[in-house]
Length: 370
Image (cartoon, rainbow, N blue to C red; front, side, top):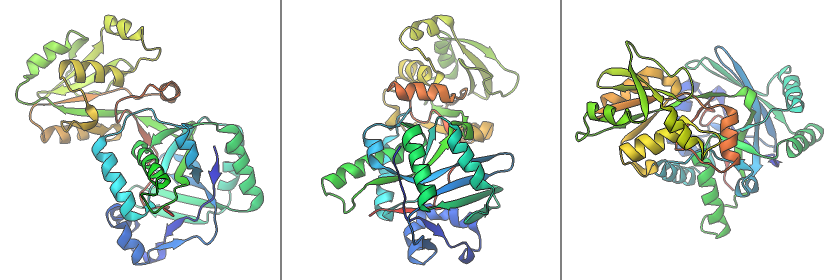
């Protein structure tokens, strides 16, 4: 992985009365906020060790610009599809801002050298520290721009990280490719040479489920839908709400009732012949969405709401209240091994198949387009 030092923009925390409010609004008002002088550009190029300390856990990684060729030549690997509407929205916003205001979160396979380097840096005082009261998080940055340290970390990633995996930022990676192609054709006034990333080893990342609430519409009755599902699942009515406890199990909320669905062995056997690593997200897409509900293109379908697992049951209920005849589907989270297998073998999952933590905050560290 080829790292490129960059001149980062940090918010001037001494001018900001409420950091939580600032970061909530920066996504919508970035250009105006920059114009009003709320950001400082670092005078020198650097990469940064980054630590997020939360209520229960802490996580560390490296913030760096990564050579765009790593993305173009498929050394930065996706594992899920993008949503067309969201892709278009982010492309427009990036061009308006003339900046990447949120790094792409990349996972890589851990190695001892980086762990030792990070733990040594963390013992010293950070160059930047930002506290978010609402999230009860502290975000710390250590600037790495000395020749010796910068050379060490650059060599380390070039040698040890031959490829990385998109954890959060599939849409940003997609629009970066679009912008690069346009810059080659000189249809945008930027020479896109790098993308802003946070690189974290998988042992610093938590992978959560990403659930769905689907609008059945008025022409499909819940009883008929359940009858169609019974061809593929063993279905048990539950006394109370529940999340899946294992792989190949889905919990469903429909008509104010919760059910546990387990794929039948015949289904797993049939699809397992073609897929060495068989995942619920794939099966749900192929069987429930495509076969039963006749939804061919989930990228452009408005009747599906994606609910991060961290929102739990509240997210399911909230989305369901705004739909006619909704069905909520909760899935078991993927593992990093499964994600790497799909990415390495170019087996792309449906959109929103994983929800990684920690979450990188919009506007905390910015890279301008040049």
